[in-house]
Length: 512
Image (cartoon, rainbow, N blue to C red):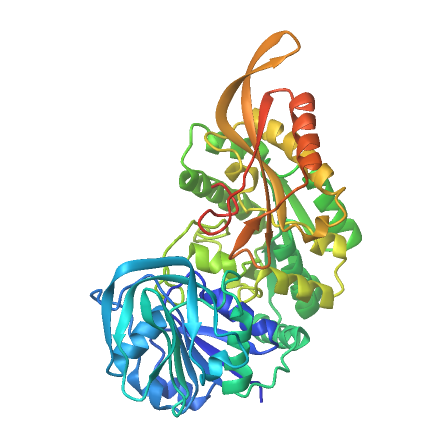
């Protein structure tokens, strides 16, 4: 029987990161709605339950709650941040608004005897993000850790195997966060740690065959890792009944359309159909500066072009997309819990009424590194799998302000120089993303004896595991100098280059 950890989603932007950290320990995790009743969990008991954090306060009207009977299932439960406050209040404790909001790294002191902190130091730094705090713990609990502003940074009831923490163990900023989760999984929940990606593939292929049957599928192929892995996975499940459509929107990287055709049609042998529609997208973006308005304009035009191509496949019943977990959480306002929208994501939604496709998203439960792992298990070439992530709206969200054909040309050339120089680094494969951004800022420069007044280019490079958090990459000064020199001297129209040293959070990886 497959063990699993059930995560009740209260809307934290880190909920999926908790799931990812658990899977890193070879334990299957699934995210379920916060209002899942105890009866559902009792019918198929998980090895453990985690109550995620969330943006709400337990004092908010209509704030998400929990079926109290879940605490009587006899299953180990870990409450994180909002989950801690909800657990405490539900079980008879008290929560008060914090007089001092804790956000960021905080020193924490551990008290001995709690299974969560087995074999860990007595004090270390954790990542806090809360305003409210527990002021009185429920009967049967004891304090397991404290901080300067939080007398109950962690609490536990070892008899009932109930635990709660006011910090986020899933983020890299928390020291020993991985060990804390491991202690919960193996020390408390007695998980075996025998879940493998091959198991996921076998299960996914079976589910796809059951859902699709003898029908045909049309897939919007971007050439990126996600849609490519989705295509190969679907091909394994249904073979030649998969039809791929690639929309050349004019917002791709230098020479990318030709590379996509070569890779997918010639090397992988997929049924690929290309729609060349650059001018339509430029026209749709004319005069638009707002980031969300640009994303929506690109999305609408993509749907329009895609729909025209899809009508050629009137026999197809299903539409497949390479949606992954970070797409779901950043573009959702309660697909599974009360999450807050960060930014909309580009997908094939809102198709005309005559195209009544049923949606297939085989990768929606996976993080980017898991998608790559699936691709490797499917035998996909590493040259494709190791490609850096690229936003669905393409260069449209890397050109701040209005998008024009000339700005796209400038950015493609600048980005090409970034890619070429970063590729020379011995550890280039460790860089999650490196790219150029064209800013709506003109600056004065001097080239030869001539005054220039041209655009500014920003260079962005980050290290990440799953795109939920990221740190800016410390590129060598020599590399930065070469990138700057090449862009300014070789790309006519740019006379200044800056380097972005922001991390996520609080910034996002993309600028828009």
